[in-house]
Image 1 (cartoon, rainbow, N blue to C red):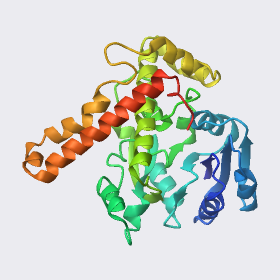
Image 2: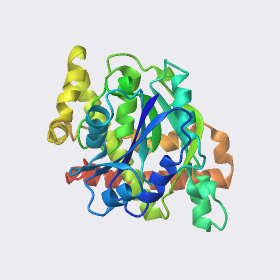
Image 3: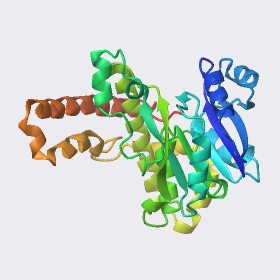
Length: 329
């Protein structure tokens, strides 16, 4: 079976050799593996270091993960590849047969469109010698809770034929959330089918954000990306169902498509650029179980969580109002 691994790398010179070595060392057991580093918009030595480490490299002058996803799926992967594996360049592979198990698990279930690896924070995988702040971050969530029903953009696999049914607009900040919606609904033409996505018995390690400022920046990007995705979904639903796939293919070829759509559709009354549920979702989930609020710890979690979400919500509104919300990283 031919399997193409696309490693998405934007200014990853510091760690690209290690991740290339990890993928090249994966067990093959009959798989025809191709490791392709997608060095997109890099201003450092990522491409040269990846080649020196033994990978094939596509040195793409323009950055952006959704743009690069389109290039990998439709232009750069082998036409006869049966499976495509999508990987970030800053993850660790703790086991030597991860790709094999990920691909075999996907092949064994023909109804699946996506098979995820389970993400684990480095401070959870290696808890020794952590500071108090790091331990609190680890307690906040060692893994992505819904990794079996989301698309974990750090490492996942798709049958090539299913991946090639999709195109993404250039410039999406949260491309995996967008892809999830397209996979589950055939470009918003069907009700969600959650059986199309699952997780394998495979896990990878990623670097956790350290410090409050970094956590806020990360969450602001996620909230902005999710708000942008919602605006795109609304625009697609306003189009005839039979044209939506073609609309997305056209959007993938037009870098100005997404900014133009956002200017036309945002802000929206009464919530502005970011829907209100991004502010209150965490608090609502906590309030659904009143027992959590019977302890000082539960009350502190509610207050601290709402305060964090309020800061993120306000910053996301400000960034989008300034026109800096749509970006590729």
